Amino acid sequence: KQKYTREAVDDYHRGVFLMGRTATDAVKGVQNHLKTKKQYKLEKAKLQLKKADNRLYKAKTQKPKMAATKADLKQAKAEYKAKVKPAHGNKLRKAMNKRRLQAYKQTKRELRFERKQLRTENKFRTKELRNQRKIAHLSNPGLLALKPATYTAGRMKASAWQKAVNEDQDNDFLHAIDSAKRRVIEPAAQKVSKPQRLQKKEKQRDRLNDKKSKSNNRLSRQESRLKEKHDSYKKRKKPKPKKKKGAKDTISAALKAAWKFVKNVYESEVKKFFLCLAIPVIVILLVFAIFTMIFSATSSHSGFTLGTYAAQDYDLSEAEKYYTELAYNLNQKIRKVGSSSDWKNGLAAFGANTGDLSDTPDEWVWGRSSVYDFDPVYDFDTYKLWSFLCAYYYDFDADNDDIYYWEFDGDTEDLLEEIFNEEYEFVYWYDNQSRWEELSPYNYWGGGNASSGTYYRAEKDAYIYDGQPYRYRFKPIAITSELSQYEDDDGYLCITDGYRVLDAQNDYKETGFFIMDHRWYSGTSHPFYYIDNDTDTFFFMHGSERHDRSFWGWDGTDAWFLVSPTDTHIWNSSLNDVCMYAYYEKYKWKTECKLYYNVKQNKTFDEVIADKLGS
Image (cartoon, rainbow, N blue to C red; front, side, top):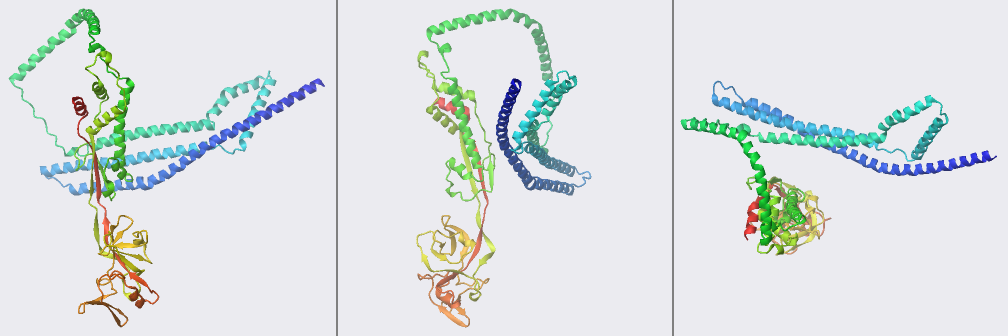
């Protein structure tokens, strides 16, 4: 009975222990699953992004450029063959053929190198995509519901196997299998397990990035060499004229050879002997001189030994950091100027007035150009800066006991800014050749015959605004997308006294559109009104009826660019109390704009600090 009770209690304890371990495994499994799930989502997003980026690269960059370089190669070869002609003993033609061959070979090398760059980039992109696909696959944690069961099943299986091995101590075969399992099978399974494979692929991704970086560096060096050799075939190689040796040169060469022989003998034999004797004497003299200098300097407060840089390493380091920060900030603003979306803010950061810079440049020209014939140079020496600051702040008139360490503060920052601003200057030239170009023929909307109905409706009242950027304005009832973008906040179209439409949303700037003046017959469209030169009136025909109009110009309720409500009603009784108008496009804005910018070095770093010390 006691034995049964003890075994029952042991089984109870085992059950409680198993339940506790199962619960622990479940919690750990959930935690590990959620952590792995986040990583899986991230790797999957990276995979999708890389796929899209590769597709975009192939469609927008690789295939068009490969096709373009192939066509350029064919064209260069065809041009070379077309230009080369047999020399037939003509030295000039032979030289020209040679020059054309060199130019063709250089072009061929450059185009082939460009294709090599594209193929290399595509190769690395393919490898990276394949590697990322495997990483995303190995990062998948599976189903959360299977995690507790998997942990518990593994633990029970291991426990059952260990219990079987422990109970049969005399079974050598079983113990041999257990030893092989622990030493061979389990380590091998661990190496090919999913986490290990994932870790291996992640390391492979890092190695791919390193290889790609090294490959890009090699290609950059090759590209630099190609650029250096771009026009090398145009340079003439002139042989250096050989100097004829005279009697004086012969005697001089003989004397130099004799002196060299004597010097070699001295350095190899005699010099060693004297050096062995001189070294102990020199050391004794140096020690004696140092002790004498220290004692004499201490008694006389000499600056030779008691002088100091009067600065801590921290302050020197902060000064260097601030100067390089000024250069970094300048570079960041220059990068803004080179951005197609942020170039105005970049110029504004340099204090430029961007109000007149209306057109976005078609081309940004940085550095040496036809406008600025110099290269941007960064001239800076850390040790010169430290030496300058220590000399600048050092009080040479004070005793050594009264000299204090200078500290980096706002005054030092102002000093460094003055130095930097005296040394460098940002320059730019906004070359805007944009202009209105007249269309031929014009684009017409409306303005046809009155009976055809090709017109647009407007409210009957229009107003004069003298002294404003516009002369007239009117409110359309029906309007097209071409003109709607130029309405003001009240829904009016604003025009000049020459009927040109202004952009009310952009400081009333001129557009390429005009409201048609219906008094005149242009020859390309039928007007509403005709001129009677005999009576100095104008009229319109409605069927066989003639309607004369005697007033000219503006009378407060109508203008020539609008057809009056009265006439509108005659033509179409359903359009009572509205005006009619038509318009056409006469000009298109042609953008032709360049932005040249550079950094000019007004003074060298040495000149700036010399001026500061001199002042």
